[in-house]
Structures are given as C-alpha cells and as structure tokens.
Length: 115
Length: 107
Image (cartoon, rainbow over all chains, first blue to last red; front, side):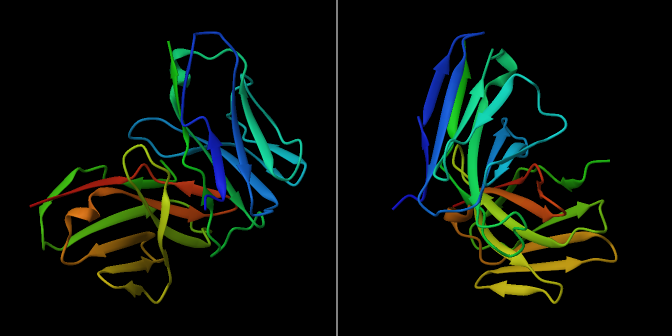
C-alpha cells in the first residue's frame, strides 16, 4: 500500500494560472519535504515542514508556497507558473529531521507541464 | 564547485558486465551517504546506505573514502533491470542529491 501519495500523477496548467499539487502520508511522519526535479538534474529541495514549522530554502522563488493543514497532508502552491517551472515535483517524508540512516519515503511524484 | 558531482553518463554496458560509479563531494562535514536508484519518471528509491567500512548487498558494493571525499558504487554481473539513474546522496544538515549517473544495460 502506498504510504506517500501524490495527486495528480500528471498535471497540465497554463502559463500564469495558479496550480496546487497535493501530498498525503499514512506514516504519521513529522517531516514533509517538497523537491523539484527537472529533466536530467538532481532533485532540488524547495522547502520542508517539521511538524507545523515551515522551513524555506534560501533560493526557493516566492512563486512557490506550501501549506500543511495537518500531519497527513501537505500542498505545494505555484502562484504563477512559468515555462521554467515544468518539472517533476516530489513529496517525501521522514520520521525526524535528522534523516541519518532512516529512509526518506518518496511519493511517486507529480509531473507538471506548463503550456 | 557543486556540493555533489557525478558523471552523468550514460554508461552503456552489456549484460554481465561490471560497472562502477564514483561520486565526489565538497563538504567534509557530510555525515551520511546513500545511493538511490531512480527509474525514468519515477521517484528515487533507496538502494543502499554507504558505510565507512564499505558494504555489500548482493551484486552491489558501496565504498566511502573520506580522505579523498568520494563514494563509489560497484555493480557486478549487470542485469537488464539495473538500467536506471543512480543518485549519490549526502546528509549534511539536509539531504543533498547528485544529478545522477545513467546506466543502460544492453542484451
């Protein structure tokens, strides 16, 4: 059974039209992450939540926002998608922030296309 | 200099071949190291952790050289199903991913 679920699997949006990607988890993990991965590039951490504490990466554009209304759900909002935002968006969870030898549990990702 | 550097490949090898990937890192304070495997348009999946003493899991061997700041992954007796991108991942406060090395195993 999937433990980190991302919906939808594929998302198409128009240039400048706000879009929301969702992630849910059944693991009751404290930490939820959002990564952006462009073709042939490394996953890039956008931000993460440690419980309700939001931690933004310094180079994450303001265009990207996130919400975590409860332990199970986390959303990625792209306020005005540009062509350069087309990518795979990966949600991941870990029990604690110091991942160490623990596994990072990934969802299957949402492939975003911007037309 | 990138925090994590990998040869992007692709590495094209015949079935049964032995192939090795290296990954160099710049932050000597990095604490933990991992190899992840990522299939095309899928999420990364943990392949193995990398220990200072080196570790083996079946056909896969991972090694860490802290003095030279690199980790390696050796795959013996390559299978068609090993075709994927292999990501080097470090923990240094947060997880840092390399861009991956693409492996293609041919019949």
